[in-house]
Length: 317
Image (tube, rainbow, N blue to C red; front, side, top):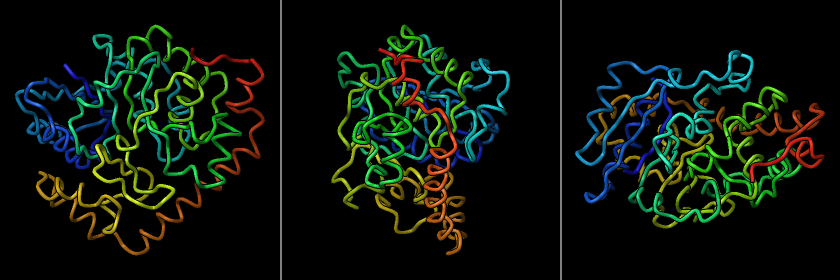
């Protein structure tokens, strides 16, 4: 059984549908898959729609996140600190303890499209590492962001991974108490971040990461501005979403599934109602992220880098 984990809510169900359909479409009949859809709020209507995408060898399960995650009392103070982020963004950190029946699994963001059998990702040997992930090439050539990775998170920018696609040694992460370590750092320091789960994971797991081929997390923005030929997985991260931008990189992969989606009309309505002002605001959003990074580094007296470099905390090893 190949377990895959996705975290969504009602707002993201229509995008998750294209992701799930592309995943199911590339499955091998000789393998068995289970897609665990974890949610904070998801209507019965959306559950029923997404359920229709299952196949005999690819099951879809729905799991309320609050049924399994009760480790933080003050969610408002911690989990919702960063703008636009909710409890689900930290879900991937809890997977090892939430799903103790699995020793290995894959987490993917819902804004992804599969162009390959996800079993080929699952079967990659992690060797002595705890996760497999791709370097986040969507941002490392930006000096402000690259400096943040190195000076605040404490990771060489060419070793900083994107957490939107993770191959996880769930058994090993349980044994190393990833969740416990995360809760300790979160409650003791409550770092301000621009990529909450991603910064925590990078700082905690440095040195225990197997870097995967870029094709397993192909993102619209890279240092060359070019699409990867025949990507295995496309991740529409940050602000350039194909349901908003008609000329987004890797558009053809998305619309190959969106055009036959049960949510097609909803997606087209969103695309056609997205104004030039909205598009302009997306690019402004990137500038806001840069300014937030500058503010964090100017205002914060401690950082991920400082607590590990000064020996106040130890990384997972």
